[in-house]
Length: 430
Length: 164
Image 1 (cartoon, helix red, strand yellow):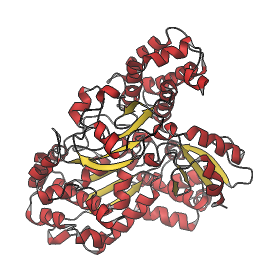
Image 2 (tube, rainbow over the protein chains, first blue to last red):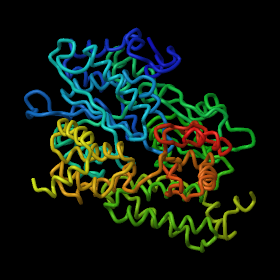
Image 3 (cartoon, rainbow over the protein chains, first blue to last red):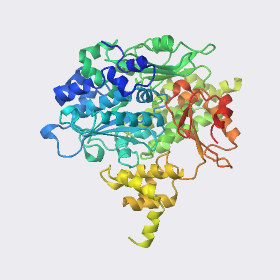
Image 4 (tube, rainbow over the protein chains, first blue to last red):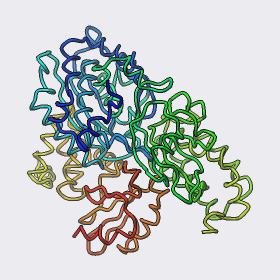
């Protein structure tokens, strides 16, 4: 049995895995088994029992999502879509690009099985426009798989057909939100849609659609091949499987590693990333992207799993963490984060469109020494109004507020020092 | 088709029209190919002019305003001319921690432009970009289709020298 279903072939090949290497490692066996011996319901069930949860940040159970799609007599005539969300753009995240560039067939086989499980005849990869190397790897892999009859019509003689294509995005962070992604796929502006109806009922062009993250889909073939019990046994705690965990920032060895779900933060930071660079101390970290709340020293022994990180007041997010060291000013870092979220707001809701730039300007003022007593309370008050779920249409503003509210919680003295010192104490000493 | 309408479509090259029509065959409604059409024109011309927007609208059976509302929403569609090479510097959180602001300042000073501008000789356009997914090799930047890792300011002369 294997321990690292996502990366073992890449390690064995010492680089990108082509179709021949993928086949030698047993590639497309799981898809053949699925399409020729299993019903869609059986595949949904094994993925449910495996407890595979979405790796894009939200952690929604994948098998459950698939089960919402009408199949058989319940389905109306027309296309159904399995869309792979390959719009990796959460700041600090660098995992999906690695998988697509190094093992594109793993994604295609996962998508094929997923498409069969919901009886979708269209499999679309929604790819970030900037991911040129991924686009080349995927185009080659799709062409190779097509030639071998692994995708296309009457696959493995099963009677099931699925056409694969890559849609290259025109940009914008909002495309990562699944209904905004569907609008972008239809060449509309990437603004989120009203839910319900949810995409499994009415998605791309009004047809049933499932949107899954790259890493999520890359787990599917191994689950079908080795079973739900095996997959669950890979996790060290309450969550199943492995996860690509990454570390960036001033650590000795920034990088990406496939580790069991539930690996403690400290182990990732110290054993894999080598600890902090000499002369730097850890101040805090964003555990899974720019839209996750800060964690600090007291959280380092927590396992990286959905529930535990949520209980600690943050989110597992994408599982690729950004380490903040003691040379970084939290106020200016917050200004950088709010600049990103303000820029990427789609502009549909007033609190997000007007509120996020307002927060950015206040942080610019604080950093520049124009802060006044009461500004911190003002930040907190407006952060609450802007970030409260329900005050805006989607969760963009909510995500924007997570790192700001937690920065104010853990590093309040730094914000206060900017007001009392009339500027940035850190930058003054540099 | 009136003569004026014909001239508008002729603002697209035969290659562009052929590529856009190939996309039209893939999508349920013509307007669903708007982004692909914009990307095709930009691939051929480097940017998308008002004339191209109008011609795309004509070809897709929609209005120039509808096409432009899409074109201006997406940051990778350029509605102004750009230089021969587009330099995009990541300004997101991990690259911020690793010094992207110094990198951007150095680039701007070497090129003699502000972010958003094109050099006088038309060689480079300098733009910001959000996270390029290379955070373990920050600071990262992209020139045309090349992802550049560990883009320390000291390496800039060598890196820029590759782009004539």
